[in-house]
Image (tube, rainbow over all chains, first blue to last red; front, side, top):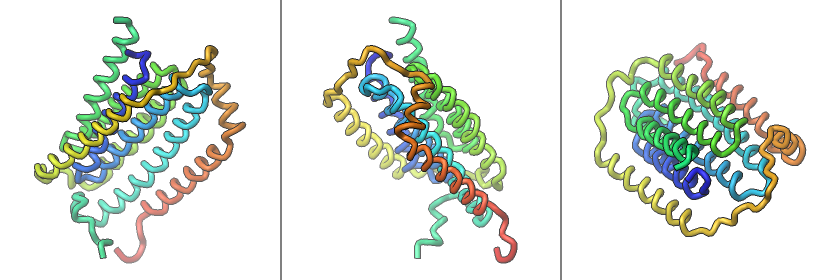
Length: 103
Length: 167
């Protein structure tokens, strides 16, 4: 099982589905950020599984996952600063009330 | 059942259970701690996929930096999370339906596609090879990532700064 591609792909698919569920269901911005991290990690597992079982060059998938980790770090810092500014300016963390830009 | 299979099953069950906890608990701090457990499990999965360097990076960057930053953000923010809104059941059911559809589509695609397996005998998973291709063929993505990180950090600092005058 640990040597079959499909087991890893199903694991990452389940993880991505859990992330999508959290992204749609949570009304808390930090909860949404956590769901995005889950989806990004599912993508990383996918890349590494294909890297091990399909790709002829075993360094390429690792390089892509390194880039994903860097992007996730950048995204997390930006999202957290936006969340802190929102928390400072609003009285609630329910994102359904953060609609001042709706026009 | 070999030892590797046992480790894989334990790691996947831990990861998935922690992921479910990370999206289902109503208190945000529990979500953050479950996320840390989930990321640890994913690092173990990376280890099983023979990418030891990435497993270590996952622990350092995700568990050590991102999860800690999330926990800091929770602790710095005013305690609005003490009064949680009630669960919106129609929305929950809709979200479960959409994510189940998403998973069903993925499952169909994954199980019906014939994946061409790699046949190369000598597999070079080493950090030396990774560094060579990252600074050789794929220099452009590497530089782009460094610029993105720089701009993101600048933007985060600029945005989180206390405003002087109005507001």
